[in-house]
Length: 185
Image (cartoon, rainbow, N blue to C red; front, side):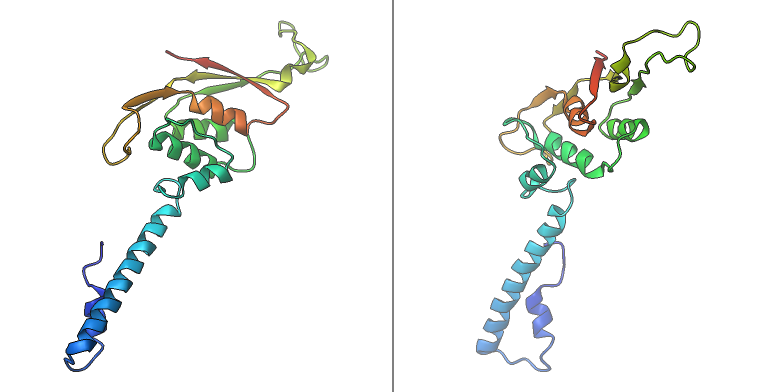
């Protein structure tokens, strides 16, 4: 418990004189119950936020429609929830690059535009009409997680690699678009 004063002491200080006997025992029992309740409240405060959740991590993932692999480490699962939690309603290049940066990736995103008479110039690439529904993400690296005492839990792998950014972007992107990922190794 992070607090120094026990509830038993606080309850005892409310009586002007030392009563003793059953009264002291009752204060001890009630104080212990209040201490236990306070510990639960402190834990719930941690569970309220994706960065510190443990018990409610599966609930956070359900809310954001995230399906973890069975052997995903807890740090990776929390990072995915934090990224989903931080996303806003719109999807644009600055927002997506900020999400990637928060996950440790320095990326660039390129949009494509079809060749349109009156807007295109000599030398512009002639592309298919639906090219505006494609975009490329470059600079993506494979995610790696190492087992870190205090963050990992029993049963987590000692290390893992995944493409969590690719999975996240495919969830965030508009349904009618296609993302091409170019990885840096």
